Image (cartoon, rainbow, N blue to C red; front, side, top):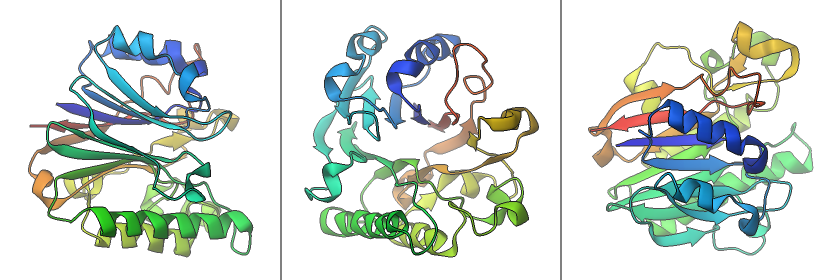
Length: 259
């Protein structure tokens, strides 16, 4: 089984590229978790993915945010949103059980510098996410949490730690919240598998950053300990990011291969 998290930065703009990429991979992805759909549910291209064997559940939003899970196996017990009307004004959380495993797909807030409203929102959102886990799950449960977390975990997860120090995604408070999430009972699979590897998942559009590999690692696949033994590999697929046409997302898909 292969599971994938991919911030597509507009599902409608990126649809043709995604379909071309899936064909390029010979249909080996079994579960697709998308973030930043920028479209309401009714505008999601369900039929295109159904033709490729996927069933999709969508929690969309016009112009901003939005998450989806597409699976070749049935989706059960689907949850759209954190369960709080205030937090769910922004569509950032969707979960489903697939083959007995709980998959949670998140698009964390981008945030802002300290003292700004969006900084506080991001801090609060992470706190709410951990509260939802506390109230509904146990670290003993088989859970994958995937998505765009908008945090570079360590300095080695950005191309230039000095240049980006104090910027959004590298702030100590953001990293503390991410570590608090892991401390709930989750393992960050990429770093577990590859303790010394440098690999990014996001590159700015400006200045050809992808070609100089001037990026950040802000997309993750986390799992509870019971699933760790099933994770054979965690890879970034640069093929859809290194496109000129159709225009790519600024993220690349992150894929875990499970035994």
